[in-house]
Image 1 (cartoon, helix red, strand yellow):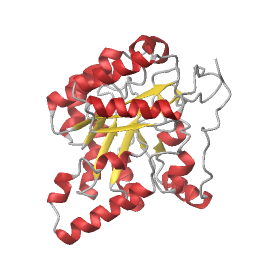
Image 2 (cartoon, helix red, strand yellow):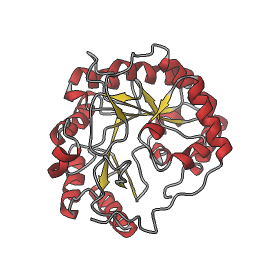
Image 3 (tube, helix red, strand yellow):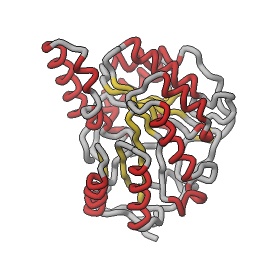
Image 4 (cartoon, helix red, strand yellow):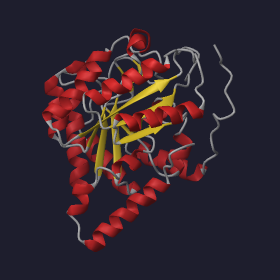
Length: 315
């Protein structure tokens, strides 16, 4: 079991002034980000480029996964102003592609799905042309909860498979491989126009054949995009890293994913679920562009390109 970081796992030093600016914007509205709570290694880079993934419904999760650094406990009181505040900060940051995730809220009757819906609606209200990507919990597979989110019309519905089927009991003891597949399948059944996306971590002891099988399973149910990244142990209390995957292997998985027919594959050591999300948005913004005249279309494309340049594919 190798715990020594290989030389390719390095982080660029960001501009601290911009990082502090984003942090202050979040604190002023009492908003949370998964970047902070999950101790994402890309936080300095992303925040220095004014890019963040909003985490709604508090910073305390009702589940305890072996890989996740988000604190566990009783869920916080739902903030009715949160959807508006998220949309306001997103507008202030000038985002064209906005990613919204949450902790698991098994303590709520709707498991937080209505707050997701309200946030999506508010984002579209304040910026009708923005692309909204949601990264949801599994809602215990409850179709009504999934429908609540889908009915609000997010452009992209992301739900992570996280690991191969054999390791689910160890990595995600309160989740199920089949349930995750079911969530993604139900999204397509409810609204086939919504793009679906999922992510998997490597380095937890999976085999290459198991990773390929997982990718095949995702494509079989119509998942459009997939992210593949290296698991990094957030603290000594979490699951150890079994293996550090070489960048060449990530490139191999990227090619395999493309050959399987995914519309978008992001694969690399520092790839996370919402990292480089803007690149995928370029493939799903056709409807947005059709609503614009020539001048507006050119400006929208330039704004999106600027945001994409601030959020590069590899670290």
